[in-house]
Length: 231
Image 1 (tube, rainbow, N blue to C red):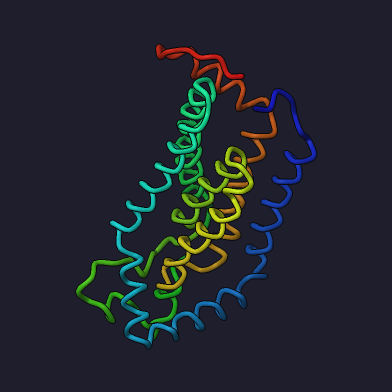
Image 2 (cartoon, rainbow, N blue to C red; image 1 turned 90 degrees about the horizontal axis):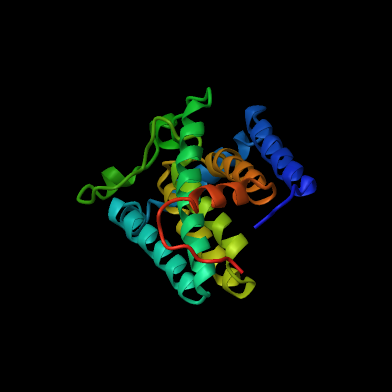
């Protein structure tokens, strides 16, 4: 838990966030977005692949993944001493708050961007290819990706709290689990890399590289629950 300012990382993360968003705003990602969408949309011509993508984009799958991420955090907490568990509980509350804050900030951005399946009227859509499944393949406001914010917020938590040997398999797994919205055409790639990621970088800069986390921890520790000392 940082007790001082790390100006190098604090400034670096915010600069990277600004560069990513600005690059998108100036149109640098348009060609990449279009190329990736047309590539993945062609894959939907294969019925078995379209069915798999439709399944992966169902709401219950999102819920199952969220539950799994919560269980991973709880399992990590079980392996720590009592003081650290208390700290982790507080940190989980802060991360949940940061997710809500990122989503709210994303809604405030002066951006109205429909998903690729709405931009390209002739695009293949899993909702028509697999009509029996209630799935998601479109969004009238795809930027930034709320789905991406959720995964990146958890990845942020994991990078600062989990051991490196856990990250070796966890981060690639998160990357795979975050792809269904891209594969269905509900989001552009830049919705994640230039929308969700900059918001997460801002949270990382302020929460982990300033005294803010310590201040929040002390404020939350005033709540009436059993106190334990963080080692």
